[in-house]
Length: 132
Image 1 (tube, rainbow, N blue to C red):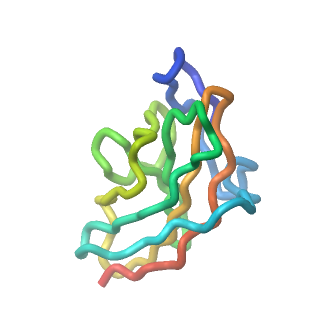
Image 2 (cartoon, rainbow, N blue to C red):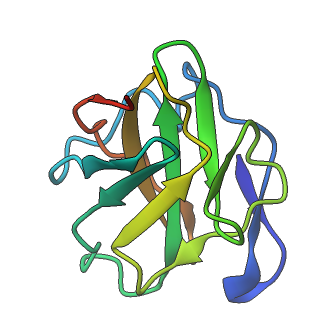
């Protein structure tokens, strides 16, 4: 995925796959996010802010269910299968309730930060959480 657009309004273009260099290997910096199940359709993900990036534009969340990678649409907080056209989650956000998870699946989440120079590598994935 590369940034496109102007200034702080950049959006994703292209698709990240589980083997993409933007997803694996992950950044060794920082702790992985923490995921918790809220109900049978929502998972909350929380992460430490990236204070080391003074020009932070926002974040992207990747969600792995053991079979496929999905991403969080910042406008709806719902899972989508492609990063195409997604806008970053606001830089002031460090916790998000993600909808669209399915009962009976396990999920692990990772967070990437974007700044004026582009997207950084994703964090390590959280521990898997089971949606019952």
